[in-house]
Length: 469
Image (tube, rainbow, N blue to C red):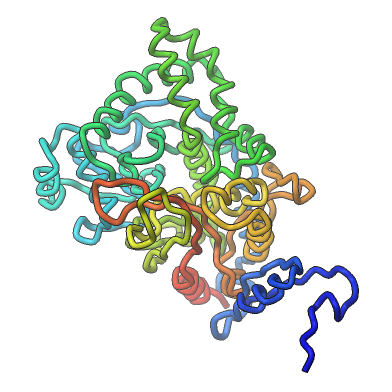
């Protein structure tokens, strides 16, 4: 029997949309036919559409209120301070970490490395062996950053004397916190340890922080981070793993203030050079901006919108608006991506970090269509970046009026992950992320792509179903 190409059969250029089965897409693409891939699978089991709670709350109306609060949010950088001085409820033996709650015994390698490094940085431990003993002794309290209005990339470790950004949601008055970004490579947030790591952290505390704090304080109304994110989305960023435009916009905004508020010219030059060479510097502002925007959407009766999505390298957890204190947890997924020279997937830890707050707030991996160049860092193709964003519209309740995507005709970014829609469609949230080495002390080894585990959403859906009519 004669084998004929698809183009021969139809006699004209065609565009194929492939739903689900990857092998089918690969076969068609091998014939030179453009393929748009939709990662779909049948919804798991019997998934009824939930309309109303037993108390009479309309879930769609509750979700509309949640996404309305998200769009009204105005996260603004208003200052800086040491964690112990500005984060409510903080104390000197508290270490915050990324993701849902976890004990030292269950912490992954990079999180253990970050905790140990933080204890040495604080002067609580004299070396790594001492730090490991103290960390396991019960004399240190561990808590998720999310429990303290904070977020942290990768291991997300925050210790008492680490400087943090203070972001205020001007629309609602709540505040969120995040440390400063160290750069890439062997750094604490990836579990890196060693004299160079601690010296860099000390420089950030003793020089970078005072220079930045004075500059930020000179803005009487703060710095509008929401506006910078919106601009960055139009300049090739997505606000999670690509922040080159956002970092440039921030530096442009504060350079004059840096010069005007610090007399030590050499110190200012070092600060400007550090920010200029660290494209990820803005990440530690997009993250607390997302946290500040999301917190007012918590506690809305009947709302099925996800308000927290985070991972600690062992577990992946989400929280839902109508149950703001409850974590729904599943094993953290693997990350598929690109590796730095000398490393492979065998070196990789499971997915880790609070940076999925960006996707939860309506950008990051959900806005990959804005940042086709990100695929050079995390893998995939520019077309895949567009497809990822289009797919996320299927599981979100709304579109963000403040964040738009030029390549999609300035369509608003997908906003408000709806637990119901995740279960109905079988589509899981897409995430782009960094990759940490699985062993403590080594640091970052690459970046890639993953998806949230289905179990989190299934459990959240069942909890929602239990309160519905």
